[in-house]
Length: 471
DNA sequence: GCATGATCATGC
DNA sequence: GCATGATCATGC
Image (cartoon, rainbow, N blue to C red; front, side, top):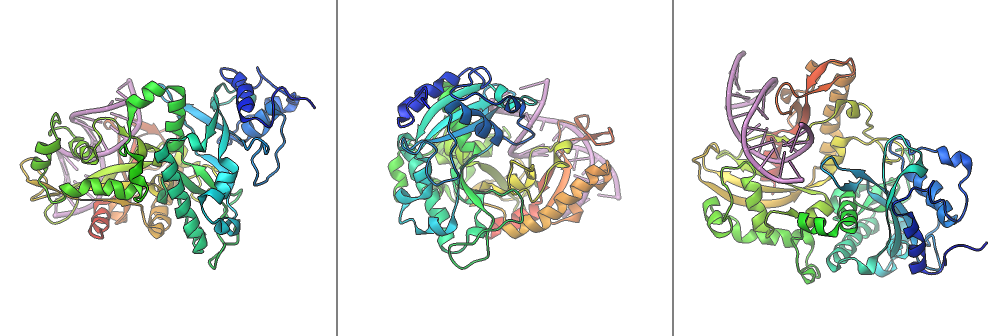
């Protein structure tokens, strides 16, 4: 069969793909006609796989097997499609992580270095097709916005260093027989996400250790968001993000985390007023975000979002400790939507088939805790010191134990449409549910149609205190 | 206008 | 003093 592009040429694969920009697959069907029944296949719920598998596979007229080689083997190009979602404030974000190849634990452990990894063999060059996800449309009716080659060698050098470091971290755990402990929060941009049709499937490990859930290399959704925004609107993206690490050479001997922590070192033990005098010019010390802004200045970023934090999905939380060591406040999270919580599955092993718990996803991510010590009850007149900053992820057993229990209690309350049954602070030393809206009139709808104040999960300050004392 | 991170207010 | 409920202030 003669194709309208050269399958052996990356440049030509990209040239041909660019026809899709601004079109849908229905409008630009490409090399092989899409069978009529495929034209009606929807991207149901969360599943985006159908777009790639049934969509541009026809466009390019390829039928790749489940192999370790890239889809266009001769060109060394892997074809990937990925959805974007519209943001209410305008622009786009990645709708989900970009799942790359499934990890064969035994084989990956044998790779001598990053250069011989399955990740790089399969994904050194990706033909990235990105479309805007619109609900309730057939897969072929989603408008495509991006079709371009993503060449690993052409990523910013800092990204390459960080991704290589991520791979080292992942393969290190695999070699140690700890594949079952891998989670997304421990790496920066490249992660090992679980990937299975159901949560009971297990794979043999490389070394001694219990069989582990199947996992795939993936680029985090945060990483994809920044990448996609930089492709779509480079000027706006550079207005929005500022890298903390301007010189990639810093990452040759040091991890990104260590580099960030070293930025805080000169300020440890210093009074907030002293830090303010050094780097705090133009900051309004009365504003609620003051301590977060000061922390950003310590890292060396002024004003904009920290690019690496967005890519690695790290959220910074500031904590003020009273003189007895107790944080001033419990820690809040975004308000949940009751309709969504009750459709979630705590054990979802693969986001294509089941909606994972939003709370679990939030708490699997990494946090940067920036801690200030007050000399009293943290009232306005208190003297305050910056005492420490550390990266934190919730201990696995806490997440799977107490947090899961409380989350299930909340699901039960919602299903029963009984707001009085939401888990209270007195019922758990770790996590509870409390109102979180603009005011009492800011409501959400329970299944029985009754309005109830918006709420969110809160981490208890007693628990935060323990975690802070440990570091 | 609204979500979000942070904080305040009340009552037991 | 703490649990619970409510709201503020900012940035997008």
